[in-house]
Image (tube, rainbow, N blue to C red; front, side, top):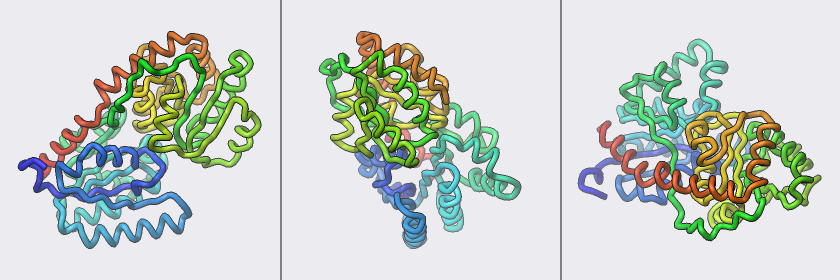
Length: 354
């Protein structure tokens, strides 16, 4: 720790670091890059994967832990999204205010617009506005989020801090672009565009018999198990993949796709670019600012099997184009999405509020 920051004591909360999801990935990346060596940092998970009872028990345990130890910290850093995440985290925000602690809110919700505009009404919406404005800094991931929240939160408190990754020590000159392997990383459900993706693959498999789609993630809707099992020649689903297993998938696939209906700023497309994959994303949330269409990847319309099919056809038909997009994506990831700068920026945010 530097002399300037060693006295900063931050208590951070969010989903447990073992949870299969993007926010946990962000937190783990911050630890891997040494945020806890620059400041005094403790992390308490407020949610785990599993049954409703297991989730409730974890939230209660976390609230008790935070209630006991919050007096020893200067700042409460709250990683929050929408829906249940907001309701759960609002209790901790109130706890920070009760103890006169500095409050940093880190908004990750890809569908926060829907939650605020459609689900919250009257006094509940007023309470969200009050809580968010009571913070000392409000971190958003993208320009879209910034534009949305500047009408809700004091602009002096808003700051933009995009999700980033630890750039892998990987020589993409060794990558094999001759394969037609397509990778998806994430929850296997309707909102991730899986129906449209499966339809597009089904339409292309005769044209490209060596096409193979790997859906690496947790099944959230059982119907997809049957659909995938029906075409085991062209589709596989190895489950949620992490660590070296995920690295091997990113190395062995020349194409990556995330055809979501909505997103905040997911890590998986950034990871795919860092591993030199030709990356295809939908023009939603933070992904619409993530790369330049036709240069560092492809940007397509959401909820469209035709758009997915056309984009996949473009890259499946041309090995050199896959390589061109992959190499440009790697350069972009190194320039724009290196987590070392994010850690320094986050420490600066903490320093600015105490």
